[in-house]
Length: 92
Image 1 (tube, helix red, strand yellow):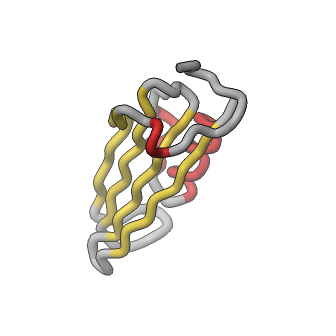
Image 2 (cartoon, helix red, strand yellow):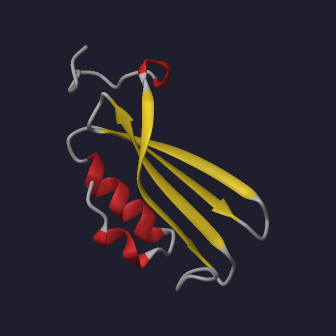
Image 3 (cartoon, one colour):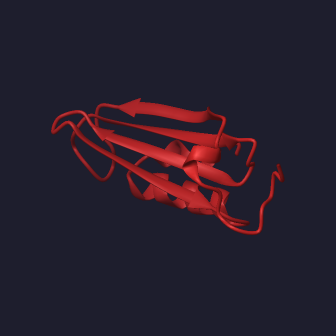
């Protein structure tokens, strides 16, 4: 199996999701509610990411997939836009 396929892999092709960043806060600069975010990288695909975001007050859970050459930058931007300023310190 190629680690860098030419098309986006299926989620069912992923053997394992490895957590690369996880953070919970009581409030962010953007939202005054407790929330958490988890960034996971697909194994064996190094450029396939899943971001899970939970707003603990409303119990709203969202998940978004990122794939491609610039996926790590898009993940950092997305997590930062959610209000987690520590996103730019994560090593993807």
